[in-house]
Image (cartoon, rainbow, N blue to C red; front, side, top):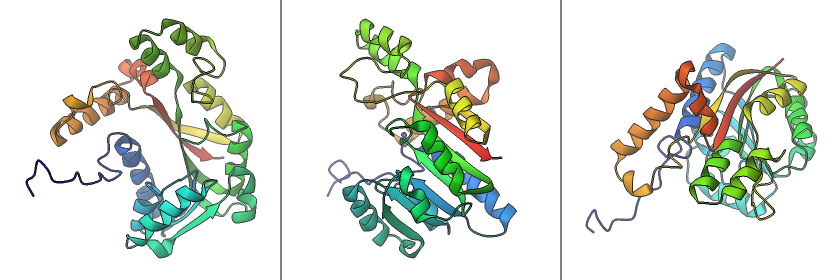
Length: 258
């Protein structure tokens, strides 16, 4: 089979434009915490779905419990886990934030990953408190959630200026009744919510600032994708240009339990 017709290999979490920046930070954090604790981490992946994050974490030696309400997603996780070398370190449990206390003891987790979940739960503040309950003192939360201003820009670029204004003004960051996203957040809102739940935010910035705006046809090569990721990293690393961070379609916060 020619290279042109060969099926595309599924990109790993470290090279996929949608996940690479977040994975880099999570991977760095887990390595640092493992050195500090002298052991592999106990990780909860809340809303972890098909295991895109759980499997690579388990392959690094950590024990990962995935809690997700979708039976189909957990079935996909089990299949992906079975194909890896780390299936014994992954547990799949059907549930949500309200059932965490039935799955995990209080203070029993070193790291919680809550990616793409806070924007769809019924009560974000309660969810953050449930997460804090299962985290050990000094444990970390990696939170990824939808960010408001990216939706404003996207609606404006699509010529839907009324929807852009609605997303900018509405308390939940939605552009109308047809918006499939239940809510979006601003950085200040996330910091305040985390503080109320007993967390100290150590880092917070936007991700997918440019990768969701650049046409896919311009990102054909690995070099192009690497350049976009480098641009995104530079955009959030320079405080003078941190305004760009607010334009990421997602917001990534790393917070420590007090």
